[in-house]
Amino acid sequence: QVQLVESGGGLVQAGGSLRLSCAASGRAFSTYAVGWFRQIPGKTREVVARISRSASTTYYAASVKGRFTISRDDASDTVYLQMNSLEPEDTAVYSCAAGTFSSMRRTYDWNFWGQGTQVTVSS
Image 1 (spheres, rainbow, N blue to C red):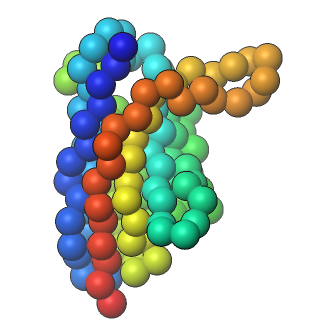
Image 2: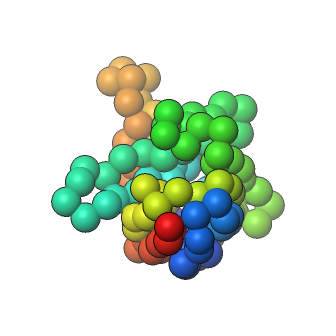
Image 3: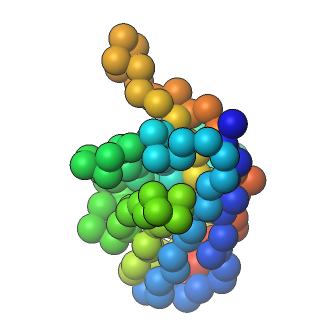
């Protein structure tokens, strides 16, 4: 089992920055890929960024590429999402998840989720 706790959300003006943290406890966090997701009320949850278990590969949604950076520190079992040049459209609840990649189905299984943290960007 892995428990995830997000922090770092808040209210920021457009153009500002926030750094979200996803702190893990439990077993073998370093063996999991980690994703950051966001959900806007009334819309489908979307993956914002993802980092592999070795941190060798990352993925960013087109809407955040060049503005957000995902990183991980396995020594402290924490994954970060640095968010720069924030826009009102980035307002959402951000959650992190840990999971594994199914080579058979070519997709990730997100097994563990945090509770989410609110990010609000004012114009």
